[in-house]
Length: 438
Ligand code: AMP
Ligand code: ZN
Image (cartoon, rainbow, N blue to C red; front, side, top):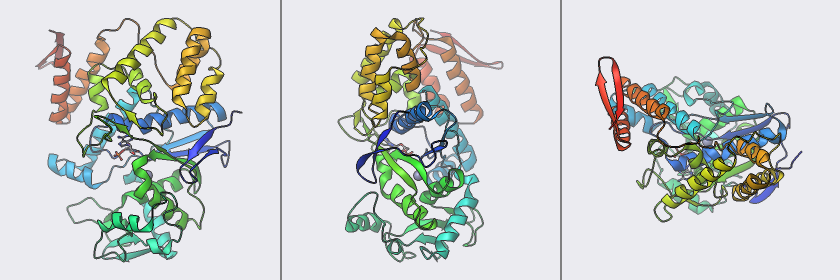
């Protein structure tokens, strides 16, 4: 069995993966908050951990890996969006969850084995909060429940930030109901107009961090093998997840290995983020006609911990590389095993630049193995021929019809514009929407 080595943020070293039970390797990745379309930076962790799931399946056997990724479907941003559109939070979160799954599927991201939703895991959260109160790690104050950081001497072990720096970040969140600025919310009260659930501490809703801790314990167990997410989640989100799980479980570690992907940037090194406005959505890239396999190849062109600058050049290079491989491998059947060099590179902390170089070599020397290697990496070759494919356009027209039915006018306008940019004219009539090329 190949050994898998992964960089562990907790120890700051590359460590050999030693699953608690090799017959049931467990991995959890923090999933999306569903209030808007995913940008290509959000797709990086989805693709990276999908690749790791495939590698784990290859090494330990499909069926011996359990991968969970949550959907955060209750959050202040979802509530704000629902208010702005005059809809319920369920309508908003369902819409963007559907988009997320469709966008990720286009990038070759498989559905995780488990997709727990925050709103259907409230019982697990209140149970964990009650344990933290009973063990003296949390307190009730003014309808809130807070984790008391001072009661956990190991707090800060993941991000290794100096205490004064953590306090400075937390001071922004200082509030009358907190004993210390660094204390974080486990449960907060809802006003009558806000979504909420009954609890021993009044009607309210969970804080974000407790969601993941409770869902991990409920779905996978107290200690999992791998916990992943983007670098920005290290502090405070993962620090808080780690602390509350460890304290609720008598000191048991939450995860053996903590992994964090680096940032995708655009426009000169700035992290792609909605607050900076330098975002390009996965949906927009697909609508422009970029092939999902090309986008996935571009996302895997850098090792996951390294920064990745998204650019027109990167897309053009990835497209040319994949087209070359598609021509060379046209009609080639997959061999039983992928190239050994590809597996070895991936098993070394997902060294994808090396794995892709090995794949390129195999395209010339062992094409059958190369096809198996592409399957292992989840990279689909574009269909030969190229040009606009009618199925693709019909899918966009159907998505626009669905958006109109959901009264999502912004999305239906965006799709109409994207189709227009490809020279497609739409005619809405009583029989539905027809399309033709200009
Ligand atoms: P969010 O919806 O902002 O919580 O992000 C979802 C996931 O995408 C998290 O794992 C983030 O760490 C990750 N992420 C957000 N922005 C970027 C970026 N520019 N590059 C890489 N990962 C990102
Ligand atoms: Zn999380």
